[in-house]
Length: 310
Length: 77
Image (cartoon, rainbow over all chains, first blue to last red; front, top):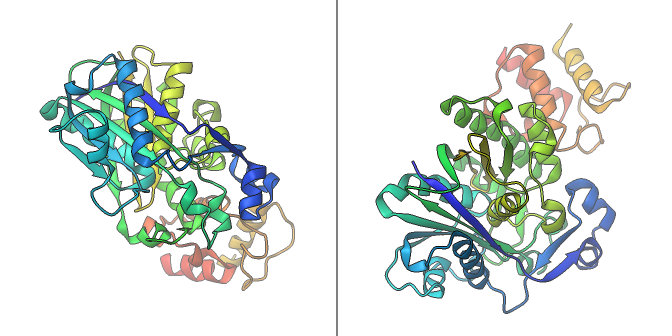
């Protein structure tokens, strides 16, 4: 058992609206918003890297928690857009925080990476102490380079998020978490070296709409809770239509599914933590009220986590 | 009622269309279904035919035409 302490984020300042993306991709701006719910996203400049955004989000999170980086026992860094094969960004993120011996591990899972980090941290915190999960993605250089995949290029944005987990205290207690992998669908959502993002949207949506409600129901059942008890659902921000469909599948009001996808697009693994940070700023945990985190993505990897305000 | 008739009714209801789909036309290419309607079709098939479709069978190609859906459903019953 562990506790969620604080969240942080780092977003590039350049706001790219659908008109700008339309000019880059040739996809109609109105169509983008209609099918995805996305109006704008952030594009990182050359100086804003996976590592620099990750460090920015980590610092924001630690500042909000009032915790010095030297207190960390473990860092988990999720990114599907690492700028090199190895070492992954985790080592550079730790160095960016001034740490020279704290273990820092990469989770190159893309979309579900931050949920994987949270689920792992729940179990690792009792052994390692404070665990910082960071997720950072710089997708714009990938989807704007030829050959452009018009169906996927319009969905993504850049950014980073972070979360601090503590074994003993925090704003919310993690009650249950679940994480799963089914590699038989690895080819249905992938990013090859030098290639565009390839996505079989029908398979992704079909699998996500089946697996996510099941994972969410599992953590609710293990927590002795029902879907009606949940105060908020914080999910990987993949597509507004998908979020609405998941709400319908669970029989809850779509308004309970926090969404910022209109402003940031799909920032892959970073999206869950960015959304959580903004939800915490706007709403926040309430004592005894469960909040569900969930994500589904390439792999396929998926899972859910239930935390309860203290 | 044969399975194709039942499947046609499911597709017509979800697509909100009165005409009957050609059994061999792609339901996606012909505009009957989009990606977000497919999960509804799968759930409706499970209810209508009292079958459970495992995740490993959730390949959109299996559900691309009425004929393919019928072949799959008949094989599961």
